[in-house]
Length: 280
Image (tube, rainbow, N blue to C red; front, top):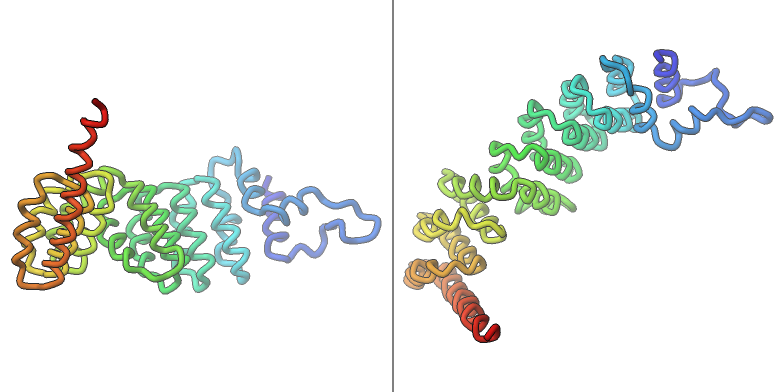
């Protein structure tokens, strides 16, 4: 088995000078070589199958000079699901090439090791959008409340694919996310509170409605505006009285948001009242 592993690493890193590849005239293609060329990660998984410890030759590929090799090895380690791959992959999150960092983040999500959460949270601030997106998707696997504040910040991320990955991650939290999000409405950072209020307004779960009602009286006008808009979208009947108070808010944009929210609540109530009549 080790001979095959060594052969794989030589092929993957382009250092296989002696093994026939099938390119020479009259030499039949080597099925192993062709498999490596087609899908290196799957080959590694098959090679690893049945090996209790993770062979160090595999993780050694994470330090190869070629970033494509490091990327392929990171993907492969994720597919093995081997717990011994976690620490090398956490180190790979700091690789100099973004394709490797992204692959390492995705791999850690596949493995699902909780010890990777702090490092993945840090990668939500990576300068490259694809890495931030990969970290967000991986964190969605864990559902760790500690990641929610930083995932919320990604709501304003302008990187391609980052907001969708972030939404996917937060959706994976389900009701837990809505519950933990509501607790972030008392975060000391008003930007976080405003983002949280907006996220709760987009949630299909409403355990955070009481916190949103309280947020209408927040010291920050942006938080008050976001809370009012969220209550309008959620269509919570008891919210009308609280939202009405915001009609007298000292900040115009909050008052405007309150007017629109009350219109939404009224429309939702009217549709609810018409429904029984249609059923009769």
